[in-house]
Length: 213
Length: 213
Image (tube, rainbow over all chains, first blue to last red; front, side, top):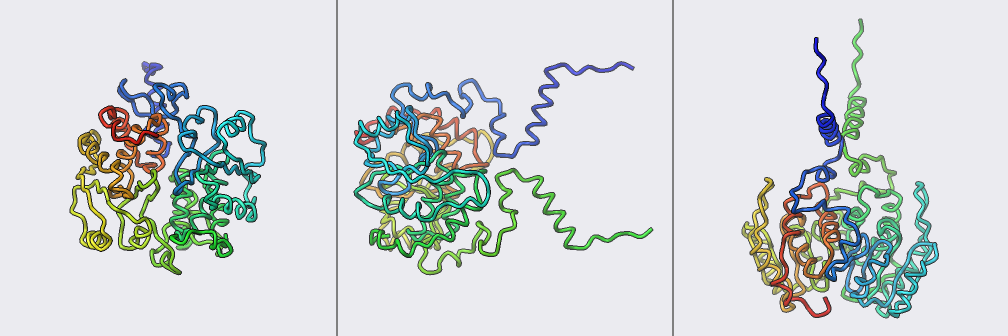
């Protein structure tokens, strides 16, 4: 009997098919063979983004409301984009000192930094500190500080909780608050964050909201 | 030999374990057993959202830019929330006629409807029509129509493509355009949509942008 040896290429293709079977549907597009005209969507090297004056928003950037933005940690490559927002303040939710490059950018552009050091640990049962979120919300809701950018490291958990509490103040129903949180946290969503947002009592902050909300 | 009959509860548990094995990591939290204090995050019956004057944003609602919002199809339960946005127009991207309940809401609140019928078919190689997106963008960028809401059915594909083209006009780099698209489309992302956004030529629309963009 003759043993059929599988050529290397066919082994590779078979492995790729197996990978595809195991991957959640979310990931399948990454394996698709694209025509040459279309590069793989992500990741793209930062250099490719700076061509022809294109702007590079920070990771997980989005507009929350008039004069309120959210994102992950801004890097030097995002500064040109941040300039276009005419920010007055940044609400920074990590305990680590702000990097020198970022502080320089803030100084040059007259942007005030408000830091609320919230630990970003991954263990369960590490609660988001209620009082820090409360103080941060007061800064966020003060029109004198807007336009402002809320950010932590990835723009998922700490930023997600702060924005979630803001939504509760805006009377959003809990399912929509959670839906927005999940849109940014995706697979990294934490039940402790959801619990924090659900239990957060907005009654003492209602006077900070403009009458139209 | 005695046949061991599996009690109903054990069968259910086994099925749930199997489901969990098959689900992508993104979905696993849905199966977690939560303490009584915290209801399952999603879905939540609409009735629970209407308590105490809470507002119910439409599916996939988000702010795109000053005076520009995006979402899935608004239902009657979302009308109170939509009122709070003081909309002047709705840009509707499906070919189906607008439901009577929604038309009534628009009439009552002086909101103008702009319809651009783009088919929502799931088959590959069904291209987004370039000309319709171009015409819709002109409506979106006209300050006389703002504040406005862009919506299709789910707020993922047609709305995602229109917003993606708007971001290109705002000079966002392609990786950030795609990142935002993925945030809403998630597991339903379509390579044809990404290709459409990449190839969309914004040069003839640049005059519509305010000078600060």
